[in-house]
Length: 276
Ligand SMILES: *[C@@H]1O[C@H](CO)[C@@H](O)[C@H](O)[C@H]1NC(C)=O
Ligand SMILES: *[C@@H]1O[C@H](CO)[C@@H](O)[C@H](O)[C@H]1NC(C)=O
Ligand SMILES: *[C@@H]1O[C@H](CO)[C@@H](O)[C@H](O)[C@H]1NC(C)=O
Image (cartoon, rainbow, N blue to C red; front, side):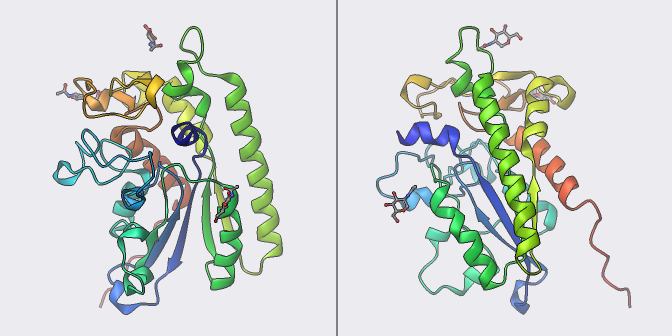
């Protein structure tokens, strides 16, 4: 059940707020990340009963120190790469912080593999009440094309119906965001539509230097969940694969996606600091 939910509930939102905390220098931005396994940076390690865990090899094999941090990837999440581009450290997993830890003011990652949508939704309104004004809502990708779904078709093709659901969902979220911007004072909520970018990467892997997008680098067993278990075999070149396991893009694919997202969201670079 939990494993299956990973495939479908991939919702990410990033909240970027200007920092008022002097000790957040040199950063001028603080990010709060909400989402599921695509953006989890280790929260699930703290959930004793979660099956959706990735704190074992080969996860993290391309991460700093070859560490399995709980990221559901061989390397960095899209969020990690965006943080790099902003020049700020990726916010720590919420569950790694002690209660009352001031570090929370510098940004936190609440994402949790297998997280649901409905309970989170009210959170955005609460955050708005607390002062968050810039919220970037990442839509769903073409999940009908991830390896865990392709294996359900006869010829390893994308599941069209699943992709249709994703598009319907995205379009409704987009409408919701338009309406929120209209009704919440000073809200600047943005919808970042990941769907076309991810689909392009899957349909034209060669354009981006990839070779394979219809199966994962890690030779996962989709009948027992599709995560990359320690006894799984890896492909020889992890940068040639769009997918790392049956659900999650590889570090190399995340780099491409983060580039696209970053360019679409922060198209105009921040003004350089004044020269004295
Ligand atoms: C929301 O959270 C509560 C517990 O806090 C849980 O019982 C309920 O099932 C959740 N609802 C959904 C739709 O996930
Ligand atoms: C992936 O596509 C290639 C050719 O495009 C095909 O030979 C191969 O069988 C496909 N693999 C899977 C798992 O569908
Ligand atoms: C692995 O694949 C990437 C992307 O196609 C390529 O740039 C790189 O040279 C390959 N590395 C090796 C060791 O073949």
